[in-house]
Image (cartoon, rainbow, N blue to C red; front, side, top):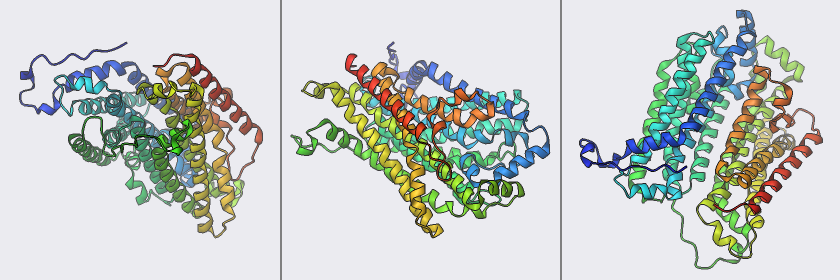
Length: 548
């Protein structure tokens, strides 16, 4: 269904406002109409997730002693701290109940906010629809303002509904609203980041990728800050907007003033986005594309070479980001054995195999996080097929002797090889930094294997994206939805006591926990075969459907 934007009837309605914001209301109504289903589903999913987590854990920790014991064990285990964050009040039922949804939930809300803003700004501009709208009485800042208002509005609605659901589950109202607003603060902060990256690049995919890379960096900073603090989070956590959301400390003192950090950050980044928007030409970005030569060189005479050329900038950015993440995680891994300061944690670590067992558990957890980050790259790279198709750049290529399958397979190959290269970089640099910090460079190989075992699961996500592109290209964003669902199954499945067959739907469930665990070949082979089958089915479906 195509929605038609009506133009303002009279310019006199805008008296007292800058002409740059004319039409913001109309664009906001259009965005609400287009996102009415998607936005509702996302908000309800987060609310249900929070309410279910609160209800499920109340029956587990019925006494203060049980909560204190669980909190002390978690706070004494750096691997768990890196994944979820710290419990600031061990006696608080709310703090223990919402542990897994604090930092992780804030990151997911932030990701949805980024996609929302980019979808209604750079994606519309890239597709040419915003140029048609701009030919009417619409100001320069109208689209950006409407997208930010929509994203901020979604975050506020999410905060209120989440708080009410937690109150309904029996948690204190003050902590419930602090928790909801910590999610909203993260969403508002990264909505501004999405607005900024939308001005920097000429591609919605690249804008999403840059913002997602920034989000991953913020999460890793928060993880490093929590994992290396003995009694509280270190200064690294305070360099991250995700760390700020966590430092609101819902159900553990409710530090409302920390929300101001998120709002000031969002305001400053938004000002930068508006400044760039005012300076650039329509359709252009801060990183302008250079005009190519009149004729292609020998290195661009195949679809694969062209695909690599199109992906190389984004791949380089991802490579720098994951390399820094690997270096950071590897450098602190050798220190985690010195951070255990509770009897419960010591007993658990001894069962795992001493300090080396703790270090391996920490590295395994971090490799799992970075594996999910690389899966996001695979999805993004595979989605380039759809953007090339909708921008009408695929048709001239397919009008030659190049077949559909050969053209599509070139982009899929870059997605597969690129994700492999990223995990190689993660494992290599994390292993080297860990080896140098511990004085044993032999650790490099073990950490590298721990990173590479994530590949089959990453390829499955790429395969799902290719399959949806072939069967229903308009729903290609389902690749991101699959990533979120698999992430939630892995993190929240044990809390909700979901059946094992349901949690087994996530490919990450079958990924070996390395270093430190066994290396079974069967799940890796099966996941690789599933990924190959998904990609083959997607390419076959693309060969048979119409373009457009």
